[in-house]
Length: 512
Image (cartoon, rainbow, N blue to C red; front, side, top):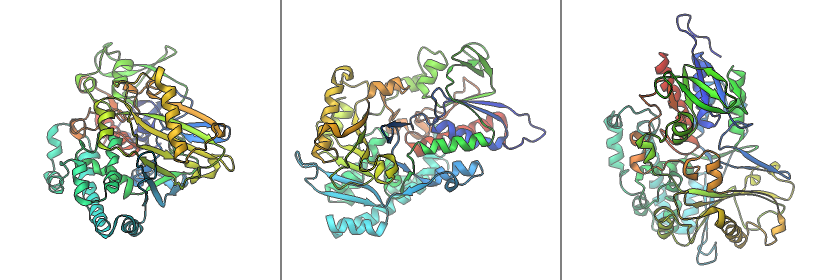
């Protein structure tokens, strides 16, 4: 760990939770020379980025898509290291294979591969949708790049102290207006493409932010940029290798990492008020710290760690993203359908499905689903001849109308049935040799408010300067690094949240 200036005292920093946000915060604070301790209640680091292992199958049980490599490189650079020395990253040539249903046929309207090579993607669209849409993709790609360049530093990679910060400097904001970033996303994409399949393909990403493409603003096309332009990667050994690698380097740099250690509460100078003074562990012991960074969701931090009867109004009134029914399956036979590492199966209803999911809180009649097959890129994640399969269906969070205690079994069987029709799973149920199911009640039990791993949704007034802040002026010394705070949901955003929390911490401690 770096040495402090002789004129500046070494301070102590507790990070509650060893998820990606907490690990990122630690990485960006190592050079400060302060004493850093990470408390993680589980036996492993990573938080949501965990793995299910059974009968020779290894399947990630959290995030499955890795993009925005420069953000990951910045984590290791802050530690004086290179990503390539710690992770074997596979760059995917086919980012997604999208399949479009018609009636009961999951391939009825064909398939489109989203390719990393720009020229090859233009050719793919030309061969499937025609020259007009191929030309449109070239213009759309430029729009996405311009949007990202104007939006990232202005709206994502910064701390906000007031709503007016969004207007400073004014030039990027004006450029966002010029680009049409405050129009509806579906409308923007429809202006480029005539093929309805391409409109779905380049707008569905808003669902990652918990918003329908018919309601999301164009600024959320930045997620499309991350998925289709910036490149998609996969760490050999699985997504969980990312937190494992960061944790290993942090330990080498002098960070104390204490797994299997649950923090019961955050201590303050005057009981339930005043600045933070440390943490109390589940065994009753107390430890003093100058700063506490919570990697737990904001609502959980207030209710469980700070002893508040309810979070502040801004958090208590937040709308949460839809949840997910996640099936992790080890199949002794590989899919017989043509597949890629990531596969999307679009249902034949579109706008109606979002109404069911988000507005009505019901399971989608014709769900669009994500199927990731990590063993496609890393055969060591499954026994020879078999496949590790990650299957995700968006479902309402716990504010919805599904009784998961009684409806789980039926929902799982329906999901499996659709995968058998798509020839992702074989017709023989005995071919499944490993299985783990995670529904909204399970997500809730893992500490996720409203039973969703996608946290507070990104409707406009819950994004950027409107999103719950990563600090609370009434609690000096407490900062947040997680998906529920600035800048938001997704691996890149959560990693950025850690850097922003580290920036707040440095300012609080008087570091330059």
